[in-house]
Length: 443
Image 1 (cartoon, rainbow, N blue to C red):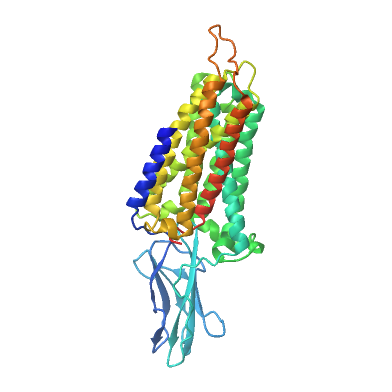
Image 2 (cartoon, rainbow, N blue to C red):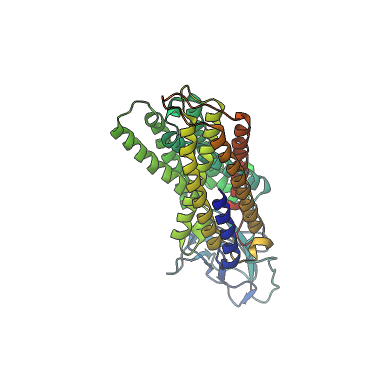
């Protein structure tokens, strides 16, 4: 664990010295007419050029006159060959006066970006738009808070599911432990419930409406049209397949060939679940998306393996199965934990370097401060894990030559306490990760 702490410190320094500019959410690059433009005749359409291709999002552009009457006509469309340009047609023969364009787009990482700009036709006064062409989300505070909580619960569920690797690789006796299996089912149910909640919340989250709009059929349809909604449905399908597979995979006495087949299917479905998280967050805003999405997959997967194993280890220490060799269980998990920590540190550094706009982001923005808090949380977690590992080595004597059960020789309460603290710290780190997903890297 000391080497892991040294690696974490080195990567933090690399992050500070090597941070390079990167883009985060979708931005408005230009518009026609421009903000504040004065025209001699009313245009036939209004178009906006964005920093990324967000597709055709119904209702994302609206044009109103001074009375608030909507004057656009027809759906949002792509007026030319540029995929990043979208527009909406205006009603014919519009009178002279000021007009306000309101836009609201959902970027590839599922976050809303909205703003306004104004133009005037004729010689009348221009009604300007305060903060035009901005990246303000305008998200309802209650919806934002609930969405963040739901994301955190989804992460907790994935971690509980990550305990499956512990049962398969480290604790074969736990496959028949009802409590251990119950944790896996709780994790599956938690991810499923959080995914459904995320789906119904995304519409109000993107549109800036309150919780009363969660069952608005129009908003639900809008979510289903975009890639984010489809990925949430893919997550539910993969989760359902994994849940059906669990009792078969954990069934004792399975032939090796059949068990290997079930394990392969479990890896594929688990990969799909993780992919739906990585493909709907900040990594997809990276121009080299493959690098960031891959790093995020490794990062989240390693956290799930480590933290999920910690939860199962805490359960195992609380009440081991009859005749179970705790030394072998702890030794196997120690190897997995060491590899997971290395993967978390390396992939986390790559993610931060690719996503953060600049070095100053670390101490001048909420996103950077959350990154620093997460690194601090991981460092404390590593220190506690180091103590826990030493306690395991001291507390469990090797199994006697006759194959008898390993004997606990140290204070098991201290060992349980250390592992319990690790689990609690993991929950805090997951909460910071949930906050990071809803915080723009540039602000």
